Image (cartoon, rainbow, N blue to C red; front, top):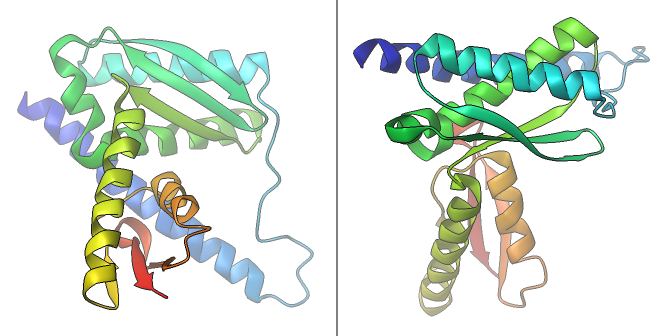
Length: 198
């Protein structure tokens, strides 16, 4: 079991470094005034070849780590591919990781594998045991509770760690709110949503 944890510990750290390197690279490109390269890469359509490659590669990763699980495609939307790890047995919580950190790491790995093989830029979302839907419900509920206490007392509240997609859910939740506005602060995995009383 410690070997499995060690492998996912490596993934967690690797993903954080990769995202930081990506941010630094894009910042450097944006600072070159004569550079024709846009700071945002064009996203590609998910082809059947890319989908099958992602499913196969994710199955390979799960197997190499020593966990059980099968992979299926949930849906494809433009440049987004949604995959689900199912039939995981007792390994599901370790596959998900703390606050979904292991799922995030697997997503980063798959994106890099796709770039290397196809030279295409896609967005991969990996779920297991309906974790992402349940997590969004929980963070929205916590954000609403925090907003209520903020209205009664205080100027702002910093919410807990969230992925970029989870932060987007919170920004959308308060988009048309008359009393609360939101902003993100911090870098990388430490980036958080702040609720601010208007």
